[in-house]
Length: 167
Image (cartoon, rainbow, N blue to C red; front, side):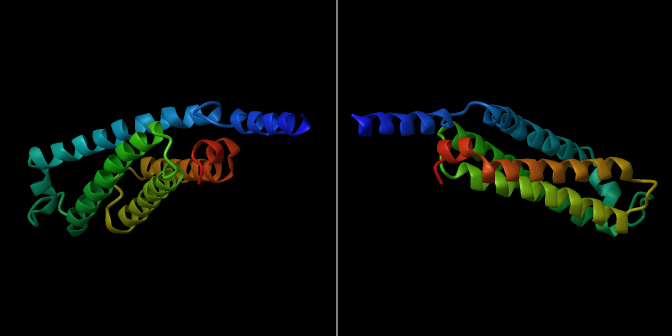
């Protein structure tokens, strides 16, 4: 009889931290917003290509010309495409409570933070301060690093994450 009672207590304790509840629900809301945010960034980049502004940035006779812009813009498109597709896959896996969710979330958070910091450093070195708003870039880079720190720490240390996405 005591064995049944201790087993019930163990199952109740395990079930307490299982499922998309508590702080994990806030993270789920955030993950739902990621694909929207990344696809909006991609749509903004599409307008640069569609409007012809791309040619103003890469044409040597343009006043906006900077040889670094072409590479930076292509890297930006590639990174945001990876983040957009990855976040859609993450959302799908999250709804299935797959054990791959923590790893993919950590990869996306670290990629995004690394990209924002790298972009800030790259634009600070190669782009004139009159063209780029460096204070906005600093805020974005700090936000990305803070976001990654919080998400990675939560997904590595949380009992609820371990119980929900058994890994």
